[in-house]
Length: 71
Image (cartoon, rainbow, N blue to C red):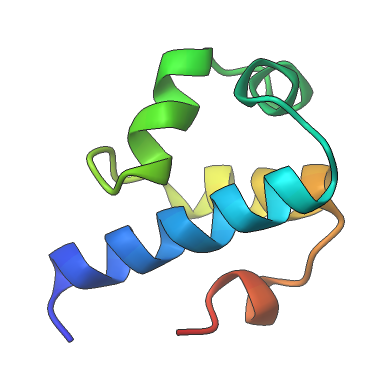
């Protein structure tokens, strides 16, 4: 799996977890103090979030890093 595929799968996992919890992109963005567009770009694999941002997302979604990175 190359880097592009990894970020795409990470984005899919974030989007799935976000929707399961009933959050909009804006709500998730507010929880991690980022912009909604940034969340959208992460979810499609366009933006490459820092590890700190991935940790913030996992806390905001109450999901383990293992689950978030499971692909």
